[in-house]
Length: 469
Image 1: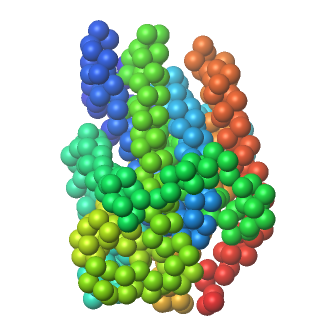
Image 2 (image 1 turned 45 degrees about the vertical axis):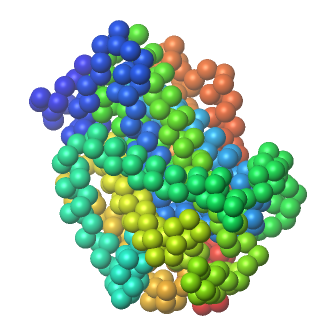
Image 3 (image 1 turned 90 degrees about the vertical axis):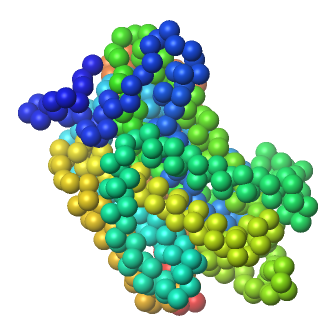
């Protein structure tokens, strides 16, 4: 087992996320299963934060407001595909001791190095764009006198918060994220199952999830576009790289029994964390359907009426989904804090993913704050252009577009991952069994087919984002 006492700077390879590598101790193999699980739990939760970021909020809100429960099955399917692919990514990191980027550099054809690396950087910038816009909307909600454009510029300075959090170590970051996710999830649970005015039609939801109208889906170009955005917001390419690195933050042993144990508990961690992410995303879609679908206004408790149109900027009125439970003031505050927190926590994972792909593919090492500023600069530019051209409208459109960009990048991460984890040479007896082979390659085929089918219309919609309607 490699330790962090003397980083091996002179060797050809290097440790993945060196500052965090092997920093979390594991209990003895004879310890109680619950202690074992708690020691391994965390990486998947950190990754799942990216599945509940402002990009997810925007696509889920658009889906519920525009198509009622019609895209609930896509949220379920994309979450299921994410579980299969994240399990596979964790398995790669545990067995090979390398992250996906390092494996691509060492084992993929040399000509794929630059396309794969650049596509990762585009994906990370697209994801960071979602965090920029989400955080800016949150700041604008918290401080209405601060314009959206000013709020976008303020987000450039979150690097101080990021670096101060990272100094406290991995476990604190993971714990903070669990608390934030739990708070949002609890509020939505109460609204769906307790409050009578926001209780959805459960049978209709179940039918839309297990027996969707596929003919109607493929006839609606808008539905396909939002569906691809949901997939991109859920199965994010850089998260596959990140998860394969994060599992190595545990002090993994290389004997057969320890590897089997690590695979088992990381699989359990992935299933639990991403199932929670599914319920949060499904709840956002369902409440958007209840509050916004087919309506042009929302009446607050004090009688104030808030107007919105069919193509409203849903992310800016999304706090109304919490209003029936909390009242407008508290709902706006909690939603803004949750949006800000999800944006900031996703920023942490985005920066870590950026370090993984840059060091793994290119063997370039730069300070995290420099890496952070580079990514943020790439993300802020389109946000400033959009707000300069269209004012405060169109934030949701740009958020949805950023998630589509993520979906387009996915095949370049999925196919190498599945090739490596299916290889006996690389994985030995821990290579993918028939179940992960079928579900993994099936997921890759579905996502790639959706990308190809939706690409022409998505390019048209991408141009329209920056043009006045």
